[in-house]
Structures are given as C-alpha cells and as structure tokens.
Amino acid sequence: MLVLGVAEVGDAQRLRSGRITGTVRVRVIDRSSGKPRYREAETAAGIAVYVPDFATRIAREPDEAPVLALREEGPWPVLLPVQVGDTVELTNLDARAHEPFSPSPTRRFDLGWLAPHESARVKFERPGLVQVFCNAHADEVAYVLVTPSPAAVVTRDDGAFVLSGVPAGRHRVVAWAPRSRPVVRTVEVPAAGQVNLALTVDLTLELGPHRDKHGLRYPGEIERDR
Image 1 (cartoon, helix red, strand yellow):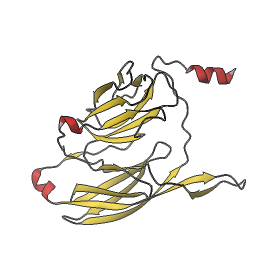
Image 2 (cartoon, rainbow, N blue to C red):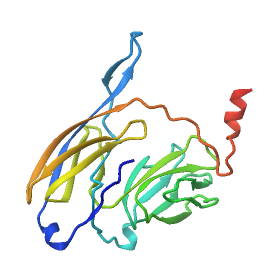
Image 3 (spheres, rainbow, N blue to C red):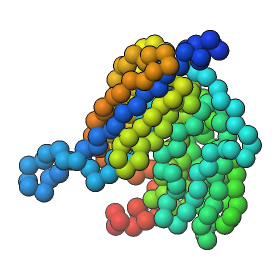
Image 4 (cartoon, helix red, strand yellow):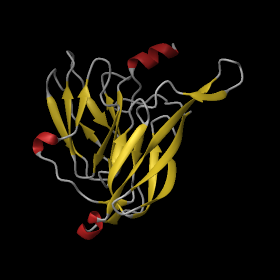
C-alpha cells in the first residue's frame, strides 16, 4: 500500500484547499471465449480512492466512530477507510457469535468472542492496511485502510468519487481494491477549485486463503484437501 511522503498541513494551507473529483473504471478478466481479455466489471463499487501525502486531523465525536458490522452475509463495509487516530466500532449484527482478529503489522488485535449485539472498539494509530478476519468463519474478511488525512472514499456503483479539503498543490491520488494493484496518479489541485481525474482499476489478483489466529488452517480447508 502507498502511504508515503506525508506532510503536515497548517491552518493557512487548509484555507487554500480544493477538491479532486472523478470516476473509476473497473475491469475484470473474461475467459469465456478461451482467450483472456478485459471487460467492464458489473459494478465500479468498492474501490478506495485516497490522497496519502498530507496529514490533517478532523476530530470525531464519540458517537461518530466508524462502524464495521459483522453480519451473516459477511462484514460490512468490506473496505473501510479511516484516519490515523480513529477508533472503529466492531459490532455483531448477526444471530451467531463472531471472533474478529487481525494479524496485520499496522494494527494487530484479538477481540475474542463477540456475542450477538455485542460491540468492541479498536483504535488505529498508524497508517497502512489492516486485514480483519473471523477466527470462526474463514470466508469473513474486511479491510481497514488507515490514511493520514480525511481525503479517502470508497466508490459506489457508478465509480464516481469526490475528495474534498485537499490542500492546493501537487498530490498523489491512489485507487486500490483488495484484488487490484494500487493505481497512482499525480494531480495539481487548485486553491478553492477542483481537478477531475479518470482512473482504471483492474481486478486481476486472486485472494488466497488465510490462517486462523493461531496460525492454523480452518477446518473446512483441511477437509477439502482430503
């Protein structure tokens, strides 16, 4: 993940901020004809777009904490951008218990069992990517993307995005999803204005299995190998 060259932003520079707008085009590999080729994905949702090279902090009230919900159909959102210093509330909205944990160097944690309607909070104090797994359910995976600034969003179905409060000047814009490599573009943001950007993200990477919190394979994966 690209979270590099962070610069602090003072009050005067924040007053000279602009915004970055644009659209992300998402492609996948189509092998139906026998010869692999790119085609448009059915949706352009779920792509993180962020500016990693400046740091400014927007304080949140305690009841404004970002939420990662644990549900029967899987975590929601799958990809959650937060700021350095944010506390995320993991809440179990399922009828069964979940056991969320992360082995990620950016923020390791093990919350133990969360019963239905139970919540726990995790603070993220370093920039980077944090994978969140469930020790009881191998197919449950979420990603917390911790960025230095609030200039981070996730695209909806049409791929459109708006990054506000970006200080005037030259910045890197990163687009990323779990099955893609980071796409990086450099733009010049005008003071009190906006710049438009078109990005293309290719979802071509395979996501392999992960181990449980003890470093062991999940029972279902062991059974499939027999």
